[in-house]
Length: 428
Image (cartoon, rainbow, N blue to C red; front, side, top):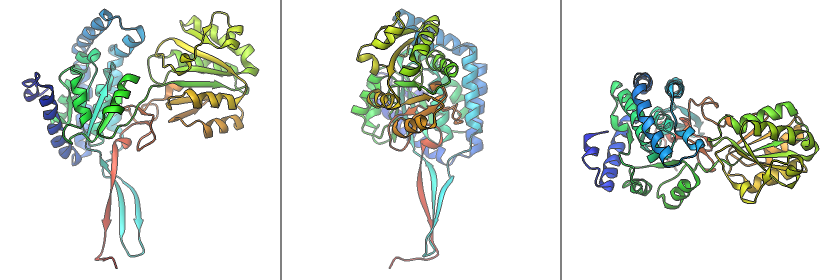
């Protein structure tokens, strides 16, 4: 954190304007930074994360204790918690991003016109990205690294719940920038938990922010969409569905559903609704619900589910459109694939859906008619992650349909420009 920023904490608007101006200057430097410079910054930061592990864990302990005092749920505490393994994973993620191809300057397409003009479409950075996120401290590293790799400066505004953890991680990122001879202002962390800082970012900081990426709950995304005066990569809630078709391998289905729901209940790719074809419900529903309950998952079912599994609580209309982020699953029995698709179309947030089936026609219909950012076949929804897609990491899952959709990695954080080469042509 620069001295300039720390001297201006009492004036949120002034602090944010300074951040924006510094980020714009840093973006100009990053646009011409070499791949080696950016990669050195990332690998040095990864090494520093491991060196600073004790300090990061100490900072995280402050956040955890504060979260418990506020009555934070177990799922949210899990999102907030860091340990040796998770810090190592964050460091590994930085190295994975460093190993990716640098997208900046890459020629996407070449057009040769009859008049001799040669037109190259070339990837360019977006400029300055504002990332507003909530309780996950690892987003500090993921977002900072992805923006750096794609040649963008970034202003990070983490949630108050993860404030100390994010600051500790941010120090490692700035160490890497300094080591590579890049401006430390290329990755800035908003030095206040005042919500007014978010409002200033949404205004665009006098034209210095080029795009906003919200990563958090429904209320945060709603505020960003309502107030933002700059383009937004929307990351809406993850109301993810798994549909088990009558043609499914039931043993496979059980393993996938257990993983999709219970591997980590607090992530946006966790399954929130299970749809089961009626032809396999008599066998699958009692067995699977019992297996889920044994792992601590509460079941909320429709009348048909409750007839097969007595311990299920009745599902309300609200349950079908709720992102629990907890060990709760809504379960419904459907008559066929068409009914399953209709349910998904009505209640989905456009994030991730999965079908478990062996019948190609059912799979083809599901793939063609389900209009979510990610649609899966015979795989857990927990794979909805940029790292699992070979992107190294992600800045979020975009559920909108403009520019970026699905996991937002380094390529999705670039735009393009046209470079036109002539030999003296004039237009008649």
